[in-house]
Amino acid sequence: MKKYHYAAVVIALFVAVAIFLPAMSLYAGGSKALREKLNACNENVASLESENSDLKTQVDQKNSVIQDLENEKRQCEAEKRDLEQKIAEYEELIAYWQEEIEAYGFDPQDPSVISRTVSESLAEKDAKIVELERDVDDLERELEQVNMQLEIAIRKLEAAEDEAEQLSMEASLKERRIRDLEDENDELLQALEMYEGIQEETMILMDIALDRIKYVLRDEIKRGDVRVFKGTLGITIDVVSTYMFDVGSVKLTPTGRVVLGKIAPLMEELDGYFIGVIGNADSKPIVTPSLKKHYPTNWELSSHRGAAVVRFFLDEADIDPRRMVAMGLGKFQPIDTNRTVAGRANNRRIDIVLLPIDAIAAVILGAEVK
Image (cartoon, rainbow, N blue to C red):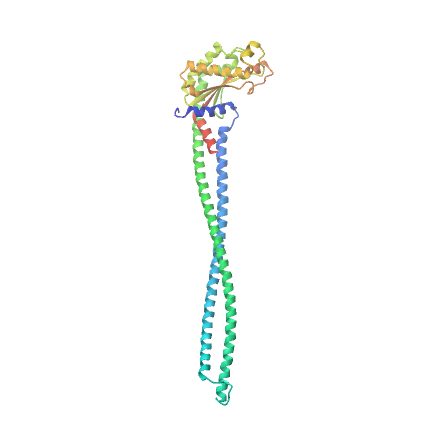
């Protein structure tokens, strides 16, 4: 237990003891906070997985569009090749007929040179050439349109490829974020298991310590001089101040020394606990001039009384001073009414709060995780 760094944890003890109330739920609330953070992390993972699934669907759709465009591109290229081949065939045919015409070397319209049959044959060939030339012009115009369509398809293909690449990058980033959240989720689960393990073990040890304290102080508890109870952070030994100090004094009475003499060995024995000694006062202001000179308010008086008890423990038992802290809460944490003599007597008390070192470590762990 002593392996903890006392200096760092005493600060946490100061804060914890200062706000200590029997109904306090910080320790128990740490587990709830971890679970809430864990649930939020799981929801975030689910949301990102849904977004990632949508992105993958979009990528698949874009890839399908790209495939269609590539098929269209291949089809256009095949049509272009067919047209180019057809044009080449027509051009060969035209060249052939032009060679045929030149081979004759005469005017096909002169009936005196050739027969009517030859003239008609040449006229048919001329008509066929004109027709082929018209077909070639039509094919060239059609090819120009196909090339324009092909260019548009190529631009659409490039745009779709760019968009698919962007969607793939977004999907990759989502997957990385999901992995990070899953790692964080695992860390939270480990911290939660550790936190709850410390809490369970601490509760068992506190029950054992509580039974031991009640047994040692059974007579004082029976008379009503001392109240002992377990809060959410630790064990509180509430000693009525009437038995500890005279009015306006910070010097322990003989009765108070007897009571604390029984408690001191327990403080030494329970070395797994930090010890917070808290002085409390009633609401009556300090008016005696000599007393007011030393203790202007109940803050100072209650703080000095807490320090006096700490000094007694250090003198009477072998307690590590680093395990102890003294403070005063003045009149601001009453447990009874301040309207009656009996109520004010109950409010003038010393609270000895035992905080398990493991509990402090668990609180710090919970704060770090949050």
